[in-house]
Length: 198
Image (cartoon, rainbow, N blue to C red; front, side, top):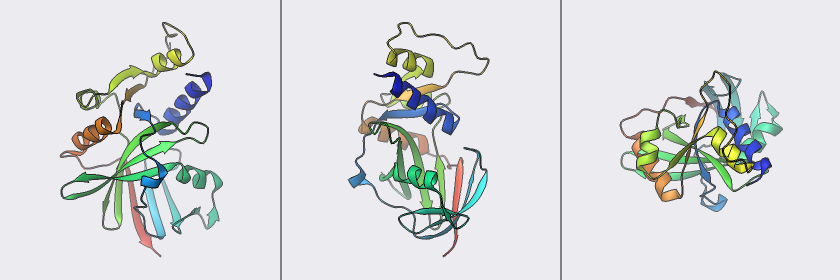
């Protein structure tokens, strides 16, 4: 694996601010569905630099403050939502990729309840047991980046912050099993998206 891939993984993790569930891009864009109907939405999240914002979705493009956001639009194009079959719930696995490396992805889960949506990006540190039970391999970000750069053993981080961990899933069957375990008896809470008008 290349240095460029290591930088991309680091960038993705810095955007979500946490350890994460990752793997190859298991889902093709043709499998994706659009869980959101066109309209205005209020988005509240502890992830990212904006805690609350209003956006308008026309079914193809995302607008903030009635202006097209090129970055936001690009981010939306790199997300794929696929249904996750769970009795009594309307769930989707969300696959996030980068423009530079389409075969590497971060994974989250989205639940739709009428016009209200909740989303979580599982934190590998706190869900390690769920991920490993489903067949994932858990590694520190330092170890993964070190291997990508061809270092053995990897350089150790000297930061006082706990190092992010990656739950690496080998295939979509394992990921889907882990997502079903993750949502069992849990209300999603990291992001709230509400449709507030046309």
